[in-house]
Amino acid sequence: MVNRNVLTLDEFTLREMHAFPRATGELAGLLRDIGLAAKRVNVEVNKAGLVDILGNTGDINAQGEEVKKLDEYANSQFTGVLRHGISCAGIASEELDDIVGFDNAISRNSKYICMFDPLDGSSNIDVNVSIGTIFTVYRRVTDTGALVKREDFLQPGIRQVAAGYIIYGSSTILVYATKRGVNGFTLDQSIGEFCLSHPGIHCPESGKIYSVNHGNFFQFGTRVQQYLADCQQKNETNGGPYTQRYIGSMVADVHRNLIKGGIFLYPGTQQRPNGKLRLLYECNPLAYIIEIAGGKATDGKQRILEKEPAELHERSPFFIGSKKMMEEFEDETK
Ligand code: AHG
Ligand code: MN
Ligand code: MN
Image (tube, rainbow, N blue to C red):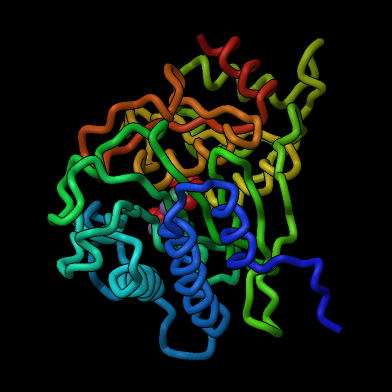
């Protein structure tokens, strides 16, 4: 029998909408579109080993990285669904050099823009390890009716209206945050719907997990190195030693730490002072989610959400996790 106590993603977003008398339903529509694209990507991710979709396309993306076939597929699904939906004026993506404004009357009159990393952790595609999609939604700053401009996208993270991610893992989960809270929806494959499985997610104040690419240890600054050494031993305050967990798909690493408590670090290195992760569609959405859930995110100097972006694909050092662990990190590295 169908359990009618379980809300689907659409039912949930519509209920949320009704809590705001002036809401137009555009955001609910946008989230529904993202859910639809996610379901399509999920189908391909799950059969990646069966069809000729594994491996590289041979192309290099905007940032000089190899493009995997599924990166391209996910990018085109999210772009296509949002282009044909009725709630999104334009997009930016890790896989596209520049912003794309949707040039049709409905889209031009939409008030939201969306940015995404279509597949995060794509080096894990070929080896059956969890990968995901990260997305964020902003209200455009230019007037509706015209094509979107770069300034609609180059907004600080604090202005996000909603942010979320999907993980294609042991099960497929969509987590999204608005200022009202963070909620998770697990895909029920039997009915093809995301169903509310993790209502009101709160990140534990502290945890036992630290996540970092230890292979880069000798390229980190000395303060970060000292902090990582401290993670491996007990002191009066940290309850250590911590457990090290690093999948290489940030979205899955951060999701685990969000649920269990922990800290994820991607510091700058000697070769890459700003690290690897992209501010607009990787760091900002996850920072927004973790803050709404009670955690913290910084670039080592300032709150991620207050950074003023200058470039679409700019990178930032990234430290994110449970509130107390982040405070301890900040104390030890300031
Ligand atoms: P993407 O697949 O979108 O390029 O992102 C991969 C990112 C992130 O998910 C992960 O945490 C990090 O790259 C791993 O990088 P390292 O191999 O340098 O640790
Ligand atoms: Mn990524
Ligand atoms: Mn990616």
